Amino acid sequence: MATKIYTKTGDKGKTALIGGTKVPKSHLRIETYGTVDELNSYIGLVNDHITDAATNTLLKEIQDRLFTIGASLATDPEKETGMSIPDLKAEDVLLLEKSMDAMNEELPVMKSFILPGGHVAVSTCHVARCVCRRAERLCVGMQEEGLFIEPLVLQYTNRLSDYLFVLARWIGHRLNVPEVTWKPRV
Image 1 (cartoon, rainbow, N blue to C red):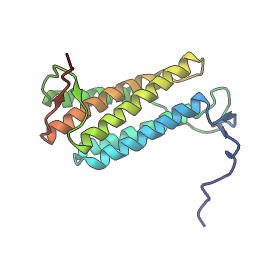
Image 2: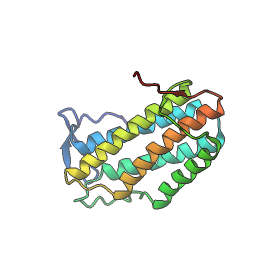
Image 3: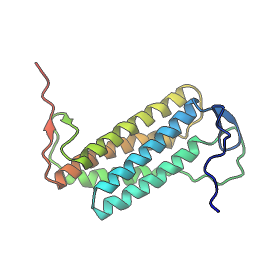
Image 4: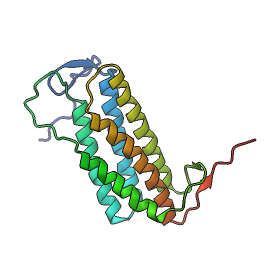
């Protein structure tokens, strides 16, 4: 028999962090790792829309890192968990930077703002980028509230949103989808 997914322990609006501390489901830490989970889902959707094997592999790796970030955010830093929580590494940030550099080699220089869209893969990538920026803002909010957050989490989410922007442009370029530049009303 499969394990039941529902526990009923959250029916009164509380949840437990890794380490056992009970917090309201509206707690900033919960909102933050919930947004990281949302981002992970959107990255899965981006991956479903593209066929480049190397990018598919990297996106799966990014999803793994987002689970690592989620675990870090879901852990009460004041408690001993008795569990091994995976770590984010500086090499994870470097991998995003190297990938952006490689994609940028193929892309024309951007001379103005571009509007998201043109293909479902491009648009979905931009949605993921926006969710990533929200996750980053929430991480900064945690830091400002004095809640512990690994510095690499902030760096990784910042770099990941940049990566998703470049990836959106690169996907469009590979699909021969013209970028629509923003032409503001005068």
